[in-house]
Image 1 (spheres, rainbow, N blue to C red):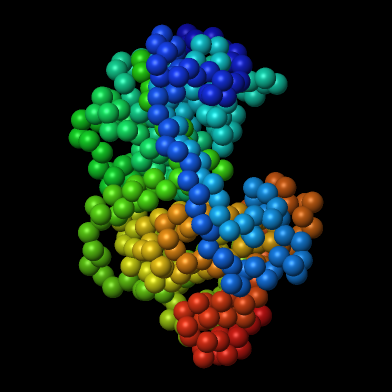
Image 2: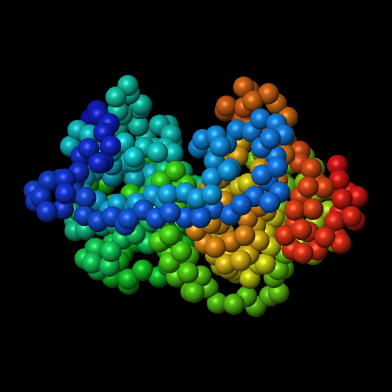
Length: 390
């Protein structure tokens, strides 16, 4: 017979934590990197769209005009005798669940019931882990962006002293996280412990690097993570395109109805369509590392922008009902050139709250081709590309 259901009240980790010099507490705040101001690339083409029709920006309106952002200040906490529930790393200290550990989780997937002031969990069994372990677990673990930026990239904020003192790393059973950790090449003394969606652990000491991104305001420490991973990927034995269009046809996520026309318009500019789902992670890293220009609809594949070389051109294609600046900020912190083009969703926005991931949209082919040609200094090629405009 498994343990009974446990009711957990919800509190933020900052409310639970004591300073590092105060011994005897179950949660201590042991380290933080200071916030930094990061200059954001201007929008030579994209900026014109915001006065043409209403646009929904995330996380807030008007962000498109901001010249900079203030990065998240990544904190590291140490928790003692803590319950770690599911592959999302939901954390419970006594009768309290750490509120931040519920981000991007789903009750029926991650094994809990949502209550008015917290959650209820009923683990099948609880396994004890002795010693110190570092958590790379986070919600949304099956999504590449979350697995990378909310998961493994957090290692970049952990001081070396905690890496050497720990026995292992807790990671989800996502294949992407396992491969990324292998390329990051952490200390050989760190054993990797995969945690499944239905598992519950009780960990003697847990080192928790909370985040390196906050609400997609990345700390510059992520540059070191991307460089370290990239350095462990040898050059490609095959020839890869220098100008890349990330082909989203067939994914079913925010289907771009005239994507065929976009690809045809970019072809005279030397762009080749590439499906990342057909490439290994190492080949994806190689592709981004050698690219001089990348055009892509907004998708989690753009988390790979961290592997691109400084100065690489990125043109992101956005739906007007869902403009997420995560990858513009990532381009800023890694020194890329950035522009965007906005297309239009096909439904009234009030209907898109739960369905925008499947909402079809169109984009001006002429604007996409012109933005690429102008940024690459190929204005003479705009005319044949524009002839294919929808």
